[in-house]
Length: 162
Ligand code: PNS
Image (cartoon, rainbow, N blue to C red; front, side, top):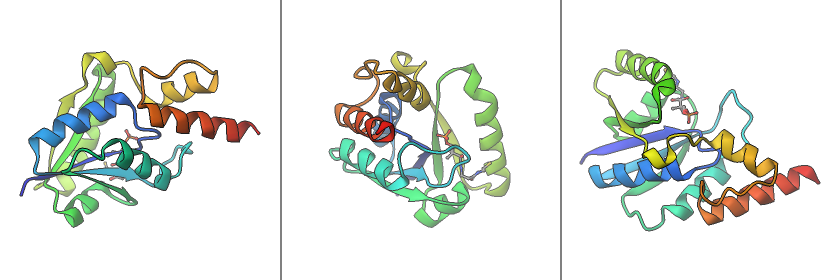
């Protein structure tokens, strides 16, 4: 069985991420979406909340499983039986970091391949940080995230303000 893992912070999941998930879902027998728990950034949503949001919007994608993880990505990939890491590439600005990540992972786990899916042009400018910033200033984020995710972002920002 061809198992892949799509790792990320997903704080929160955007339509750009969702597009990558849908396309990778067509390629692999099973796609694990791995939500990073510990990040140097302080996330808006807990890992559990991020997992729940992704599970909700991916409920019709039967080959998708959503997990949270701590530690090295290649260890989680091995535990999950994933031989491929999927990452989305938006623009040339992503390239340095993504190359560094994939080359390091290749040295420590030579049997695991990283593949890049180019982000849909429609979402090539999009990031979770931008979405949060727009939402923080009460801007319209309906083009950028799923309806349920937008509601959760607004709720979270309102709770933070009160
Ligand atoms: O969405 P992001 O924040 O760009 O995702 C980054 C992620 C989760 C893929 C990366 O930080 C990661 O793999 N972290 C797990 C720890 C690890 O394996 N780091 C070093 C590999 S070089």
